Length: 589
Image (cartoon, rainbow, N blue to C red; front, side, top):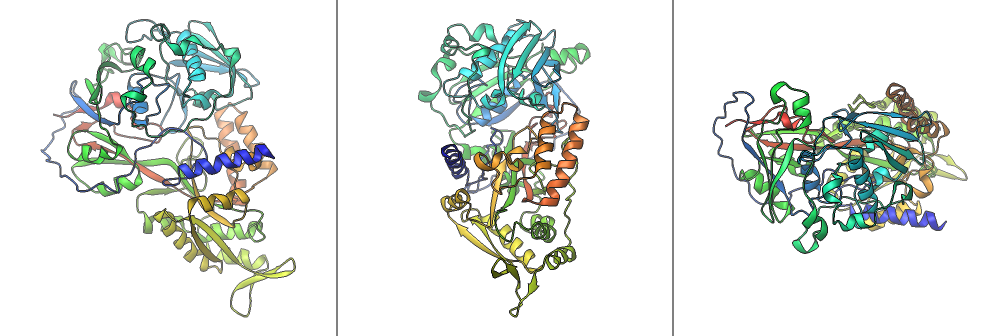
């Protein structure tokens, strides 16, 4: 019982921290670019005609960052620095545009039949920027650092299921898991750092544990860090050398002003995949400019101080339709939904939940309230990804069907014209309360539209706008009918956190949803390494969930990347690939 109370309390605290934007169910440091609702004024670009003569080598792009807490990619909690160090450091595995894991520093991987022992085969001919070869020892050192970092690495949760790991030879690295997990490759997306240079004299290395001494680390959330010189990790700042294997190498760092990267003309991928280095980066330099405040990002972009920014929904909409920039929208990892309390006498009836799903028109909500700012989705899996390669809503709007389900389940109009039926000893009206936090204007507008839509089928909804702490107390006590929430999903397409019965007591299954078939499919997915079969299991799982409707999934918000017109190439950002194929970008002069 104490464990349950503790877990529920932790959930409430986490939800409180994130309530200004989106309540979070799962955590991953990704898009933390703050909105700019308080920004004043807009500066117009002076736009000259830019003629695109095709790819050309050279030039520089300028990017925005707040002051780094550390330049160690394993330890940073600054979202900007985390993204930009991806130009310098590479991971064993990366995610493609469809959220599928593809080889990077690991050329391939195999797994034992029980899905417990994973073998990662590393690439040959990969060299660090100081020309030393990349080996399995570097991977082990990175694992050690993640597990032993005093302040906690944001990547600890990626390897918390790892029981042990070891170097078999220079090009073979093995890990053993506590529990089977077919999503293990998706978790290997953290940057690998070099052992030789960074382990010497490092206090982090003094108390390194071996793979057999793995301890569970606490989960770290990604918060914007505006660190000053005093709170920079001293040892890392002084001794850590930005030596990676990636397409850009560290050139210079001036505190409070910039971090300068230069094209790595010996990048393994550029040389390996193109003759005479034709696949090496076109852009010669990346200048990461440092600003004191996150809110400066809008002014920095508008005044041409930086060339590329990523913005959340509340910020990018003011740029929509501008001809002097390139704006590319993509679904964020922020999913909005309504949780039903399945112990409620009305909502425990699946027919009522289905009727609600048929009555709510997500497309109308998006078009009327936030046109272009969201994409409809029933589940917390981004549409058009490899496992969920559709954006079709299963329970499409059908008012007639909704009314039929309600009538078939015994609800009739009383003498006041209100739908009601006897439940237990009392005559119960078809009336529900929807909790919404009172400081989220968009949710309130959406709730009002949902109320209007449900009234068309005879369901009365009373919207209760409450303070965030009051809303969370209702969740904790289980005293609610419906509650409007959101969650930040991770790169791992595992929806157990919301639908597994194991998550009811000490997790995030707020609805209290329990279905044996759903639990079985969730287990099958986590234990199935064949992607075709895994997708088939997910399709079956999705069909069951959409029949039961324990939650009313609404939409993912859209984020956007904004580019100066001089940036050319395949500009195709995604949730997990914000700087996708950046080595093929070029600058038109």
